[in-house]
Amino acid sequence: MTTTRGRIDKRQAILEGAFTVFARQGYAQSCVQDIAREAGVAKPTVYNHMTDKATLFRHAIEAAAQTTLDERVAALEPLATPGDDLRATLEEVAHALLRLHTDGRSCALRRLLYSEITHFPDILDIVKESGPDRLNGAVADRLARLALAGRLRAKDPDLAAEQFMALLLGPLEARSQLGTRQLEDAELRAMAGAAVDTFVRAWATP
Image 1 (spheres, rainbow, N blue to C red):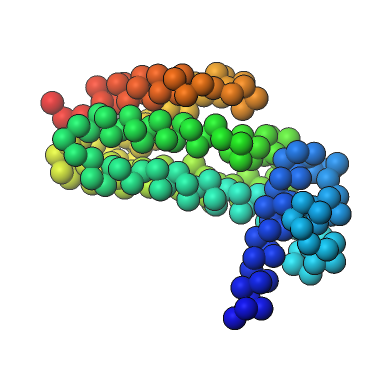
Image 2: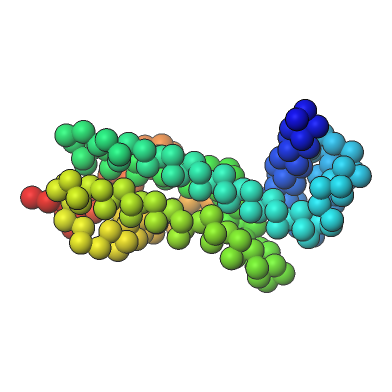
């Protein structure tokens, strides 16, 4: 058990170290020795877990995408018990999603996707497995429950979820300059409020 746990911990450290190095230096400028140093393991240990740098890159991207998805799904939890003020709960969730979308890992993940997609076209599918489609599905599930409770008139929860996320993230790339400009929390709250205001007008019950 200890050996298995240690192997899992080392693999996790390698994936996190690899993502950090790739995000900082780009794929071409990164080397396995830098990744081993960042992860706190020996270079042969990296090769014991991953056969080559390209495989390591794909697995690091996949792990980072899964982590960002898990955090976003957790941020939807208040919608399970929204209380009397649905708008306030939606704003809380919207603000949390915007904060997560502008954190360091998320911005680095998008930059890596943009910069390496021509060399690794398959990473788009890797990210989609733990990306917008999965998140929209989770949002749709929460909105469907609210519709069943009479809080929303969402006959099509998938469409409602798609529009909710579009209202949130649509302006974000331009405002953050593709993740290179740090947005103040007050601006994120204002964006969340504006998105929820439009969403509520379209989908909330009278």
